[in-house]
Image (tube, rainbow, N blue to C red):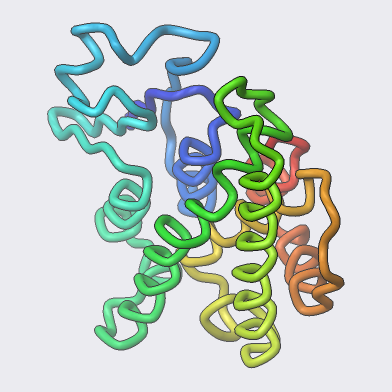
Length: 207
């Protein structure tokens, strides 16, 4: 059985849990991270030298970095519907996975740390506003892409790319600040809400 190390309210852990549910995989999970066991311990660092969550343990195989984990799960456990073997289709999915993990994720960091986490190190109003504006701008890229596909982020079928993007959309809606009215993002949010695994790990009130 798969082991997942990481608290269930972490957005990166929720990526992994969502994929496991989509693939009907059995797993156990241990709480690590903020408020639980510290990943700074020697025990955890032996598994992940970055001391970050999640970590996946599949028998003797250990893997960290959430996007690497979800790709592995799809490859190892017959997830071709989520992550097709065709090189061009896979490249487009990878493009959006990587974009979410780099550009989109970095855009919201300062605003989220201020508005939700109340971090004393993120109290500059100008930087909060800059983060919000950047986040809204990148959500506009998602809206434009969804206008082209009319369904999910890479086309008419749900894919691995929708895991990270879907959780990001949910985080955007739950973080209180002024937002543009992106109709295609709203439709996408409602479409994802038809998936049982998304209701469990995405649109569940966790930010």
